[in-house]
Amino acid sequence: MPPPGSESVKQLIDAYKLQISGVVVDVKIYSAEGETVPIYAISFLNISDTTLRILNKLKEEFLSKVMVGTINLPEAEGGEDIGKRFEEEIRLLIKKYFPGINNETTNVLVSHVMQQNIGLGNIEILLKDANLEEIVINNANEPVWVYHRKHGWLRTNVVIPTEARVRHYATTIGREVGKEITLLKPLMDAHLKTGDRVNATLNPISSRGNTITIRKFSEKPWSITDLINSGTMNPETAAWVWLCIQHELSMIIAGGTGSGKTSALNAIANFFPPNQRIISIEDTRELTLPNTLHWVPLETRLPNPEGKGEVTMLDLVVNSLRMRPDRIIMGEIRRKAESEVLFEAMHTGHSVYGTFHANNAEETIMRFTNPPIDVPKAVLSALSAILVQNRNRRTGKRRTLQFAEIETNGDSQVIMQLDVANDRIMQTGAPKRLLETLELYTGLGPDEIAREIQEKVKVLNWLVANKISDVHQIGVIMAKYYSNKLKV
Image (cartoon, rainbow, N blue to C red; front, side):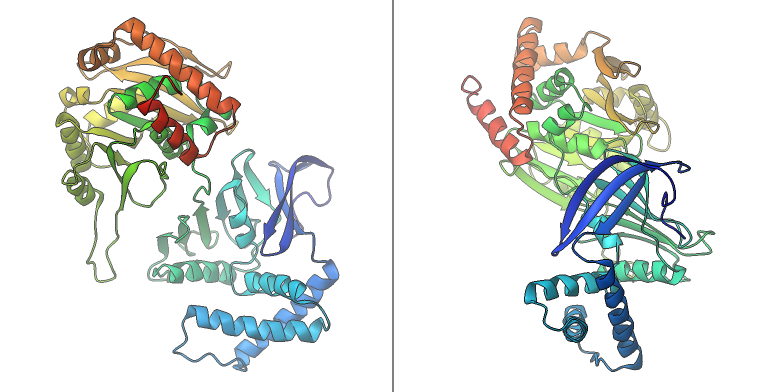
């Protein structure tokens, strides 16, 4: 199958380079006549076509040696030892096919051959691109798809040659983390040591072929500066969120799949003060909080093949209450028991933050107060605010859709809302219960709160203007703000 857009007029959208173990990879994103979506194309800059052809011949000789058993692999050897043995053999073959090349070039070629034949091939190149959020193999008959954080869904020029190779990749991934995928167990959900999440399915469960879906772990955690810079949140909304967090008001971050809930949770965690103990609870570590904070991350654990050793979200939520937390962060709230414990924690003086699947503030209330979660509406008043994130699937833009307060009766009142037509977050209501709560517990009146908001907007704009987006740097600035606000 020819690469997408290979015989049509191309219009370049974006271009950049990746350095992967000495190999320079050129990435071009372009639109092409006859193609329904833009194309993500990779090519090797420092490996010529002639060299690639010779490497293919080398690969055939290497694989034939493996098949006939010329390369001895004692059963006692582990994965790393096998890798070293393969590398030694590949080095010998490279010396045979490329006599006289220097060590640096040899290392580059060895790395390329290992990646293409022992690893995941060109999928490993896609995994190294920090701009990609998702990598999807639908089957061996169509190119790999990727979700680019700037350009949305793209079709690549990477094609997996056979269904057997797709299945081999899934098996390889599973083996690394102690999971298996077979005809008897055709579904696999795994988390790699890098934090990436992998889902795989085998034919005939996925009727068009074997599939692999990789959701990449963000190498650089999102900060509040990133959210403002990208237009996801404006400084005024961020200032209200900051004020709530500073004064220990509990908050839920709601939104649909892929709307940026976890990214927003990570970003607003920049506002936690350094003199409080924070316990985070996740299925897989996605949060990265400033290293200035007193933070203890906890992770759930799946049962072993015998069905033993499982540690659930509920186990960790209950356990966290025995760890003297000031703040509890829950990666995702899904079940009734977890919700009941969290709301009980709010009522006993803990500040709670978590993500929740709902598309707006009103739907968040409805989902919490109806089966299967079914929390009594009277209990919801322990929650102070809801921050709703949204992704426009047509444009790919992620935005804060709403910031709402929770009234005494458990209803929500939207304070800030996205004007979708003009892509601006506007104030649509005056906060009432938030002001009452802040005045009751802090003594701040409406005028003082307004000044606090303006002060925080100034600090946030200063962070943006000075391009300070590292969560740990922001943590240092927040620590100084809480200890000596006037100095900051």
